[in-house]
Length: 420
Ligand code: NAD
Image 1 (cartoon, rainbow, N blue to C red):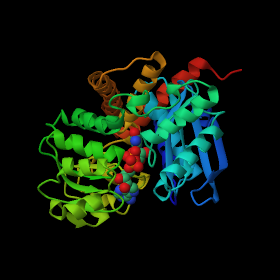
Image 2: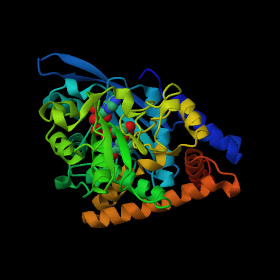
Image 3: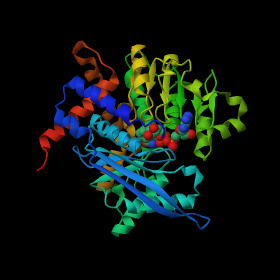
Image 4: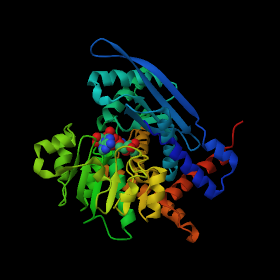
């Protein structure tokens, strides 16, 4: 990744730490990473050649419990990105009050360039390299950009085979048939809708609001579909291949069903050219809409385009989509941002439910999952808006969310002490 988000994530931390008057020893402790594991490993390719891949797993902080975080397969992944994303996971788990610390990992690879067999070989070899790090009581991976339920199934199987028995709680985001949770696939996008509803409950509802969604993968496609089902009008939609616009509202269920069979938005548009017009990718971010949902990659809202953003509410479904510079501009312009560490916490929350179910060999219904998800996210939202009110001196939701997360982790560290 050319511009790492680490600098921004650290700057946000220090801003919150300053406002809280955080003790220097906790400041230093919370800007350290417990484990930074890197590995280079060989994978046999379909043509008989061998390629070396670079993978990593970074554990930021484990004060609140075993660590949790996604596995990202991306060609431009850097160790600094993984460190930044692991720190975001620490605050995210704390804000949702989950008994987890934060971690993140991944492999430098564009999964679209691999065959299914190569993807499996890479995942299984990477999982064996991770043996000393991961485990149901230690560190529990989940899907992220470029990985999915199938990748989690291979990880669970590889780890289980090396132990001689099935250990479903070692990863979350698995297919339901092998111990995944109902509702996990939709969880992050559903959480985006729940937080949007919590925010809008003070000023109406999602119904009739015009919405622009960037990214049509796991998070973006589900968020767009659920916003559409709730009566929102999705006028702009994009993935990395195409950006689309229809002022009357895009046929999101049609696009969703097409994407679910393994296609991208460009292919959908090729077969339904009247469904929307093609626009410049950037226009999705500056669209004339009520709500913007960046659900693709980081650092897309920058100092350059932030002055042109027209949405008054941004829900950060992706991790780190707003640079610090853009954040300052948008705050100054009075745009409300529901920050990533709150907005996309639905994923890790249902991952927690999956882990709990796996440990108890229980299976919850989707209705139970969604009800518990809403309860946890509503409580997290309340904690953040209460902190944002800041006794009559309002601060942004991002500053407030960071504060809530940092306070909870610091309290855990203080109670546990620094052994020995
Ligand atoms: P994914 O791989 O399923 O989908 C990513 C989507 O973004 C794809 O449609 C891709 O084409 C699109 N995309 C990539 N680059 C783009 C660009 N420059 N412009 C427009 N679209 C682009 O990934 P995902 O799991 O949906 O994750 C998306 C974001 O949400 C990431 O930031 C991830 O860290 C975050 N997130 C994911 C989860 C989860 O449960 N999957 C949970 C929390 C946060």
